Image (cartoon, rainbow, N blue to C red; front, side, top):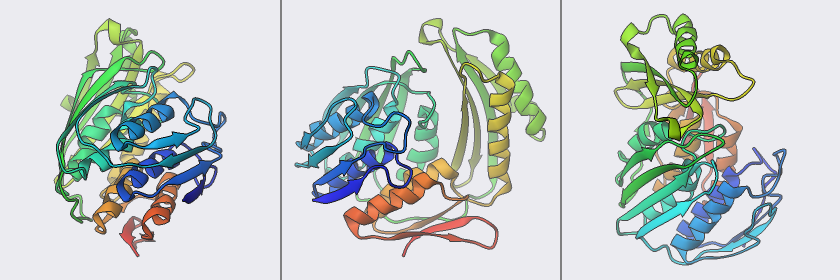
Length: 338
């Protein structure tokens, strides 16, 4: 049994999600203690428990300690069964993070699957639906399997209530090289809100324009969602390249002004555009697992996050593969199997 200290590295829920996915794929059981030991509130939150429950359901697995607040679980995988599944977080906890847990095992399960996930679709501390659909799945679909995702209802913090649908056509994951992102093809900025004053979106647009001054005027837009899907606000910046896509998001919350939110997001996007990297920091976090399961390939990214380095550590525990981050002369990092 593989033993993991959940407080090591980034010390968050990603360790649990990656361990669950790798356990289902490799058939190796694991025990993890100090779950989310690096967070202010350690232990499994509702979204993490939903991820565990989803892994149990699709994998015919058994698990000790699966409850909200638990700081230790022991997971023994069974055989992954493709099919139609529906999982509800029950809070604004992220649907994207639940998807991360079960996607790779179902991609390799031999028959198509369909998922309906309910909970948060746009909240802090998790990739929003738009990022998963356009920045992450676009790379997965180049590796062999085909995954399509649809957002049927937005879910903001703290209410949740969102829903996404995912169709998975499995296939062998083939190694690919994602070194050159290619020429920039389009940019866009969308201030999305529901059940909040309209001027919040206008102020976000104005603040972002001041930083991204070379973006065309028609790249900036406001999107008002139905009142019943709020209250909530997300500011999305997207840059589409010939070979990839980056999405930077700012999430509205009490105590943070619209101007500050948009300025931070715009500065992050400007920093990425100034680099030559294929993947932004959050895309890099997501790509390590499928690249490892493909057995190789490589991609370039900006400065690797602690999330990425922790993912590489967990991957090595289950597969023996060592993934390294080699800084390049232009400042980007090449992520490859050693």
